[in-house]
Length: 539
Image 1 (tube, one colour):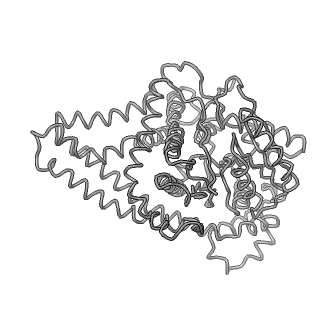
Image 2: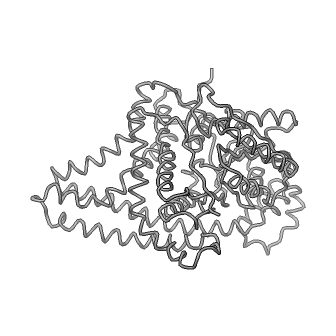
Image 3: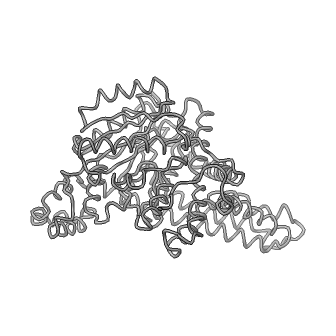
């Protein structure tokens, strides 16, 4: 009997509970260690603080370098005519013979020629573009037409044959009659535009499900599987992309995705991850939300350069064949996107990876109808994201199992990176901001010259790190969409000045929400309801 890849519900076993406690325990211990060292060995406390501060400095410089690299690659990949490259796969031998050296400077050109040659030599092992369909599952709860229509129009406006796109609008019964009526309206409007437009209602109160996106898109995925069977379309010929209601794919996304799916021999054991950029409404959002949105965009941009640590996030794609085999997404977690990486890794026994797509999916920054509501909504969104710490237990138990599905040598480094990412998120910002003053306040009678000068040393280090921040600020200005006419030029100045809020957002949002989520896991107060981020469109 195959082992389940589902998260347990209800009371956890002791080992699982230990790993649920572990992220919060380590985070709190690292804060406590600073206090203890300050009381008993002030020099050790100083060394401890300096190690953390220097680590943050090195990471800040590395991030700045990767942001520049990532933006450059994004620009180059966005300049490629992916539709043309995809069409050339239809007849690879002829396309290879007609390949022009004048195109050799373009992004990925050498790889493209190699792919043509490989497919020409072994045509049987590769599907042709005309055989592939893209299914797009758009998850919605109670979002209005002003949010959903731009997303559907972005899919429609892609440089890809609309008649090879199946749109599935996955809406919630708990959204009420209004969303049901809207789903019918959109289906009537768009069903002739695409191969088909299907609306699927996820029933409320299904036993064994937490209230969240995972259950909704899984229900839609199962309905899609039945639909494809009726249409006699093979699962192996369908790539499924999941979108939130505010996600707008790049015009190149479907061509690029389909291209990569065709040329990869291990295509059914891959997820395909575009770069999430929170830029849709960036000019409308208040400063605090803008700083967090751009920071998150940079995180995804840099992650695309590190495939070994890349994970599923929000909008991502997988083959229908793989999804159907593993029963789609988890219905027991509110962070189904990041969890999908581990779920897939275990189901396919390590034969799985995430492939970066160097094109964007544009998403909304958090925006509500008042500043206070926006600040609150931003906190709620981040605490949901950082509840991904729940995967530490899921992976830790697998690591300790005598029947583990992935080798210890492969899984252990992944587990360490997972744990480290959540602990770092919680503790780094407050220690860097306040750590240098703790020894001075708790043990003033035992200060040496090094400890006395520690705040100044940390301040200088932070100033050096500001050079990295300046680089990212410059890149952020280049990434911004065109300023709407309703805003004066001074709005652009505020886009630069907003970065003085970064220390505040790092502590008040990133650190606090990480501690919040980790503490709930420690106490067994599980987050079993997906708090939908309110989406407001500013007229």
